Length: 328
Ligand code: KG4
Ligand code: ZN
Image (cartoon, rainbow, N blue to C red; front, side):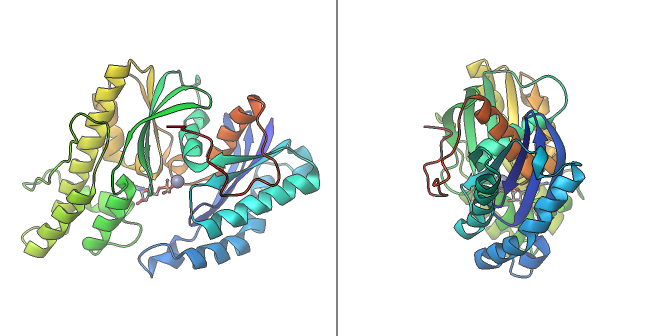
């Protein structure tokens, strides 16, 4: 099955051609990051206008790069949510129109389920169930047990800021460019270790996370003016990575998970990748960085497996339709 998948939930206009849910024949991502950097964050209205300009060329390029035309495409998928409404609408309606015009089956995909399926784009054997998924993106931090395709149980998640959001806000407090995640990681890599230790919120007895207190701790350290930027970035990153890797590895052991699947933009973080691999008692699968951050291929992979389960979205489905993934 050759699927055209579109992702426009935030500030990347992305399209991909995915074959049988396991191979990205192409994956094109037009980033708007430079445009939003001057505002220090994503401006929703600017993002949707940019998607409108980029969507046709990006889809064309995805088809060209895969060496195919719309005649070769068997089905169309797009991110339905969660995300910025004005951004989602561009990709979702474009994909629905294509499906309608070409009389192709269509499927709306949950963005977070898409992130998880980036793990199916990695070469080698398919992930094994039950898999414990750690989803760490700009908007979400969730621990989800995946028992099979389309079968999810949410076991924990953040009570306040998402991990990526904490990186972005810390980046801003440290005067680093947007987005904060990669910038904080780069600063942190300048020092081997630091004398500074920042607090970890362990949320005992739960598999929940909390990162807002850590952000406040960073603010106090910045105001005190005793530590330089790399030292603070390092201490912040260590605190986030310690809690994420600590809780994920413990839960994987308790559940007897076959594998740990890591997903979302923060999964691109080198220290997090290292620590999860070091501490987890089972194999840890993490997509290559280009499939961790938002892309169309992950949406195509997720859609392939849902199509295989016989699912289709009606063309009157909209971005406010209940997201059909982790029921809990
Ligand atoms: O999954 P994603 O591309 O978009 C959302 O669905 O939110 O995640 C974006 C988030 C941002 O918060 C960004 O700062 C963070 O992922 N991120 C990173 C790194 N690369 C991206 N955080 C830490 N280290 C990185 N290397
Ligand atoms: Zn995302």
